[in-house]
Length: 500
Image 1 (tube, helix red, strand yellow):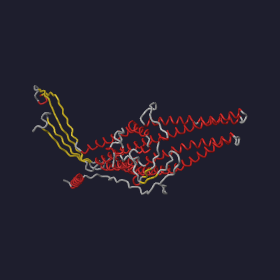
Image 2: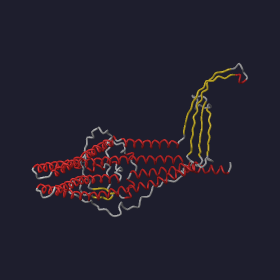
Image 3: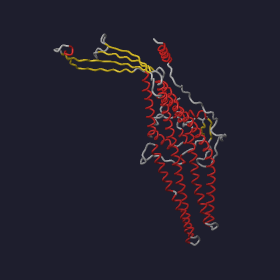
Image 4: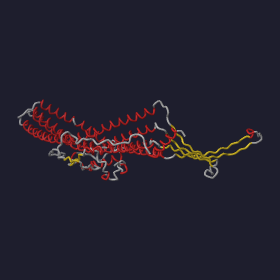
């Protein structure tokens, strides 16, 4: 035996016994060093306003998030609609199917670690002529039956198969967290759409009240004109103002209908099907204690960050696959057969063979080397995307925290503005009827009140939307499956799906 062959054989033996796997071993990215989400320390409590939805909210450091965070709004209609969505939304079904596909691919690749056994059997009917052997008068007809078992076992000496399994397992983790992300996105979208519907209903109600008041005002100026106490231009201006206010209703009603259609879609229903639930701001309660997760925990909680990490892991394992493909491939094979199917395992009737083959690519114009470089480049790309995802996660939380503080202040200011505008309008009406001010002054007061009333409703709704945005930005509590009832109908909330 040559020295080179002995060295190669010893190398293969050591590699096989040690069970090595070439390529890098994946190391989870380090936790970001960020100590907080904003340059300065935020107030521990938001400002309060004396109106529904204006309650002060406390920011509690490292407060855990329940699995059903939307129940903190204390709206039975909202909870019922989310349960419908979890049962029927096709996006969740698609994400669940993608997870099952990824799991089956792992199981399929794991089969490559075991020998492949195949069997074959054949039967033939033949006639031979003795003329072939120098006996012209001899002929014979007979049957030939054969059976054979074949075993092939490609040894995973350098761990290429194990790295492939590792890559597919990481891809399964990716799909699992994509499913969690779809779950979180669905529930957050339902909450946001419900809040938007409630806001639109409040804006429509406020607009109708304003229309009613302006209709009464038009009747007043018409009576004054009939008595000679008001000019025709005043009547026309008031009629134009009333018409303009009525013109704001159809766009609001259109938005409301579209929002209802969106809710139907999220719930897996057609627009023509009745949802059964409707929403108004009075039916929602603003959560008073809000969680602020530690930055070091955010990357564990955000499903998009975890799925990005799993994808990075998959690409790391693919480098090992590409590296193993450059090394020798060792395969063991054996066959065992018999000329009779019934006597396949009978003594003295079998035929067999055994072989070992070693193959190594000697020249491929750099194909395997470039594939490895491509795998390294894909890993670098995934690493950059992971960093981008982490930065976006921190940005989402920072934006939500800023919005909570700013919109609480805005609601307080809008409430003061609306009350001042209402007082100003009431006084202007009295003065106009007494002839103390012109109609132009009254019209200005009316327009100011109209805008402040709509702004107040929108500011109320923003408080609820901001709260939902914070829960979504922090990951939505998917790690607390015990909070989720087993009968909620959502295939994505099974305990065997949760990754520690």
